[in-house]
Amino acid sequence: MPRKQLKNLTEPMYYILLILKTPNHGYGIMQTVEEMTDGHVKIGAGTLYTLLSRFEKEGIIEALSEEDRKKNYVITKKGKALVEEEFQRLNRLVKDGQDILRGGQ
Amino acid sequence: MFGNNKGDKKRKKRVYWGYSLLDYKGMEAYFEKMAKEGWMLEKIGEVWATFYEATPQNLQFTIDVFEGSGIITPEETEEAKEYRELCEKNGWNFVTSIKELQIFYAPGEEELTPIQTDEELEENLIRNKLWKKDFGVKVMVLVITLGLVIFSRFRAPVHMDEYVGNMIYFVYPLMLIPALLSVIHSGLWIRKIKNHGIPDKEVESFFTGRRRQLMIGATATVICGVLIIGIVLDSLYNPHANILSVMFPPLLGITVGTILRYLIRLKGRKKDDGIIFVIVGFLIMFMILGGVNYFRNQQIEQRINERDRDQNIIEEIPEGLEAYSIGNLLFSTEEVTLKRRTFPMIGQSFAIPKYYTQQETWEVDNAEWGITIKTYETRNTGIAEIITEGYLDFQLGGIITYLGESWVEKADLKEAWNVESFYMTKSYPAILIQKEERVWVIQGSYKNTRENHMEEWESKYEELHEKLSETTMYEEGQEIREEIDELRKTGRREEMEKLEALNMDVLIEELLQ
Image 1 (cartoon, rainbow over the protein chains, first blue to last red):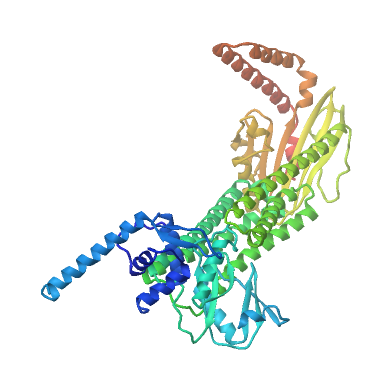
Image 2: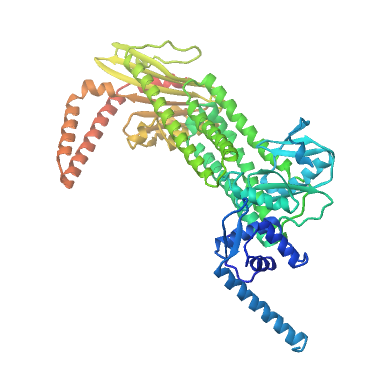
């Protein structure tokens, strides 16, 4: 995708990368995301396909050997750093929210 | 499920397709309507879509643009299969694909996750995979059309004497209308998406559906049909017209294109197969083109040689032509003999109901004179003017351009003869006259004269050339070149003097009658 380098991750992107800490394939990712989020985050098959091929191109995930014609993906070092960064960012957001909305409790 | 019916002997229906790929939201609504009426989509071809009979059912269709698709990518790659499987697991049943578009359906009442859930990604996908190519192709067609229209103006004399040429000159510019409309449509389409996002399923209207495509397509088809009629008329009435060269490139292009598309669609499995097919296809096309070109040139050469060998052919004057006894008119002496007479070009077109070339060789006082008169009897003064201007702009059988000649208007002669145009070339002997709806081009041929009268001139010419080939000094070479040039001019001047001694007045008077 000729979109600029990823900055903030969208929810689906974040979940995909989280899940790929252990190797998984397309449909597996889709199911896991739905289970994890109680169906709050839904990823369409086309969108997932686009994201996976984009992540792969950018070296954030990599494809493992295929089993039963199913391509398995796993997160790379670069990907892990990216999720970690996003995790910290989200944490900061939550902390700031807590400070102001809940008076630091 | 519908998919199971495919093998059965079900009733089928072919429907004129005619959607632009950009209309895919309109297609969704159309497939749903058809399913409700009991017709399920089976496949889509270039012109037709096939539906088979099924129980009327409420279905939802969704069309997605596939990330890994492209015009030279096979439709059945492993990647595509993987993607479709993913969609099927989500409840979307794959029906068929057409180029970038992937068509899925699901029962109407089911609430499924859409195939695309990220609008930004989807917009990018549509813009890059679908629209860019569409817009690019349409702009290219517009530019080529415009180029051809402009080019055809410059070749007016050539175009006017053949039916195909007439069509190209008068009818082909209309092609700019559909070409321009296509570009505008594509531009407005992406602007709408940019401003309002991707639309929901669209009910077919003039701007979203097949009626617009039909209008654009019909205009183009009518114009192509008219060109084909021109080709047929030319083959009947203008035997010298180079029809093969008009027809061959498009025919070859269409054939090779169709075969390639077929191979890519059906045989290709891996992503790179398409590129290999394209390369092989181009190689074959160039080889065929080269071969045919070589063969044709051989044929033409042979024909010219045959005619040239027969130095004493005297053709009968074809019926309905006003031929002139050129020699008797041009030479005052009684001692003239007609050695050769041919009519190499006789034909007709809409713009010029009659045109012909008369070529004669006369023997006069042991010298040979060649004269060619090309006569155009056009439909009206306007067309005669187009032809005259075409000659002034462009060419005179190639030789004038080769000699670096140009036409000079002879205002006094124009007035004296009471004609619309009177031009002569500076040193090479040629005259162009237009009176009302008729145009004449008179050329003198002096090859034979040179042989008989100018041995001295020729030996000097050869001597200079030899000298030129021996010298290595630039300046000396330049001097010799100038000398040759001067000699050539003198030679031509001598020829001109001889021409001026002829009774050109008598000939022109005869022509103008």
